[in-house]
Image 1: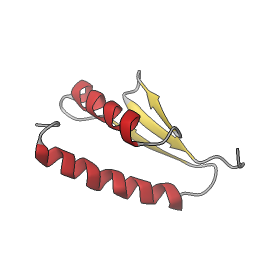
Image 2: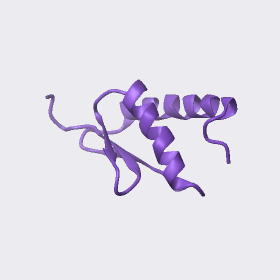
Image 3: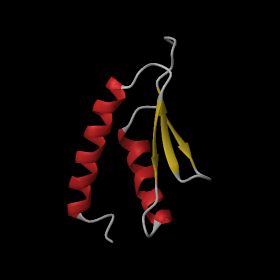
Image 4: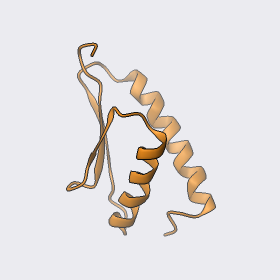
Length: 78
């Protein structure tokens, strides 16, 4: 239930490293969506929002209404 303690930070770091490796492997034109569906989804969304704003690049979109984060690997070089 604790999303902000020391143990959770380690788990989040492991998870985001795995997602970063997926970002390199997905085909162009595809996307990755991370949706907050825990027992306390609002708290999970707040914690992950702070993480993404502070630690991740601008290619991630934040979908507030869906409580989700999306990465789209475009087909064309921008």
